[in-house]
Image 1 (cartoon, helix red, strand yellow):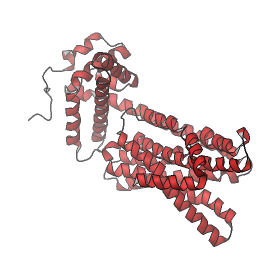
Image 2 (cartoon, helix red, strand yellow):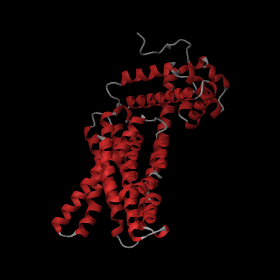
Image 3 (cartoon, one colour):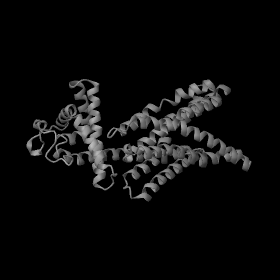
Image 4 (tube, one colour):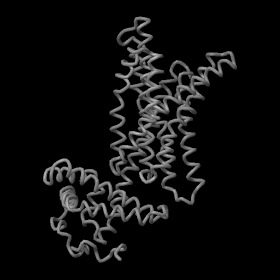
Length: 397
C-alpha cells in the first residue's frame, strides 16, 4: 500500500511540476534528509530501534501521509473557495487551519501504528521522538519536491536565474533555514506517545490524553508557522527567530537530556544482574557510556573477527540496554504481563553472545575509566561465579 501511495504521489507531483521540475525538486529536496536521519539515529543509539520501524516511518511520511495531505488539502481548499466565493481567503484558511490538522494527523498515524503494533520497540520518549521525526522527515522530503519543482517550473516560465530565482528563494527558506520545521511539529506528538509509553497500563486516561495533547500542540505550532506570512512583511522572520528557533533548541535539549537519562538508567539497573552473575562487573559502566560502547565495538572488530564481531557486540549492548529499561519499568509497576518472559529472552541472548562481548566491554570499561586491571578477572568480592548459572538465579528449576 505504501508503494502504491508512492507511485500515486510520483504521478501527482510530475503532473504539477513536469519531469524536469520533478528531477530538480528531488535532487534539492534530498539534501537535508541524510543529516536529519543521522541526527535521529544518533539520538536512538542508546537502544537502537529496528530498521524496519524506521523504514516504515519514513515511507509512511513520504508516501501515505503526503498523499493524504495533498488530496485532503486540495479538496478542502476548493470546497471552502466554492462555498465562500473567496479564493484568497480559502488559501489562507487552508494553510493555517486545514493543512496543520490534516498533515499532523496523517503523520501521527505512523507513530500510532508503531505504538500499537511494535509496542516492544516503543518504550519511551526517545522512541517517540525518533519515529515521529523520521516520519516528518519523509513527509517534508516529498513536500519539498513539490514546492521546489513548482518553483523551478515558474522560473522556466519567467526566466528566473541564479540567486534571484524563485527556486533559490524556496530552497533557502525550506532547506537551509527550516529543514527542522516538520520534524519539530511532529516530535511533539511523538513526545506525547513516549510519555504514554512510560505510563502504567492501568492509567488508560493518561495513555489516551497525552498523545492527543501532543498532537494538538503539533497542530498549533504548525498553524502558527504557516500563518507567519500573514503577520506583516517581517512576520515570518519574527516567528522564525522568536519562536521556531527557541522551540527547536528546547526540544533538542529535552531529547538529549532524555538520552542521558537513559544512560543513567542503564548504569543504575544493570548492577543487579552483575550480582546475579549474568554480567561482568565492569559492564554496567561500559554500557552506560556511549564512548565505552564504541570502544568495545572497535576492540571486537580488531581482535575477534572484523565487522561481524562488532555487530555481535552491538547486539549485546542493545539487549543489555533493553534489559535495563525492562527492569526499570518493572520496578515502577509499568511492565507488561510478559515481563518474566521478556527478561528471560534478553538474558538468554546476552548469555549466547557473552564470549565475544564480555571481554570487549570489560576492556572498554577499564580503558575509558582507568579501572583496575583485575576487574576483568571478576574478583570474588562481586560474587561472580564461574558456573554458567549463578547461585542466585530465579529461572533455575
